[in-house]
Image (cartoon, rainbow, N blue to C red; front, side, top):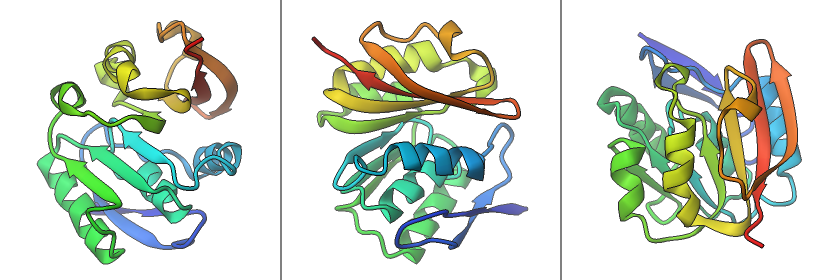
Length: 185
């Protein structure tokens, strides 16, 4: 069984991409994605992006569609990772623009050396990984970079790094989303 996600804007606008039916996998809702990328409109071009819990790839593909220079996607589920690989090939995305790491974020983050302009932190809600992944990812995030957080609870309860300042937030149904900026000063 497979599902479809729709890219909202950019070069691949309206493109439908399949993803696996995996327990806990829920693409960022269209309305929330549209809001997020409106917030990032002037900052996504040529950005180095890290998607900590890629899942369906909705956020990564949207970022690439809108001009991100490179996306590093982390997805531990092999079935879904195969869909991500197929979708990257379908869209003719080269290794220069997208890298897929088939492992958990906890396994991948210590080995990454590059710095990122934008990080997506949208783990499966039931795993409650926000604080752990935020701490692991923080050294890889450039000063003044953006961090997108998605959760099923009040964002103020997530115990994020003190240097992450919330800029904006939105809510759609049970989804709460916020855009933060790292302030290393």
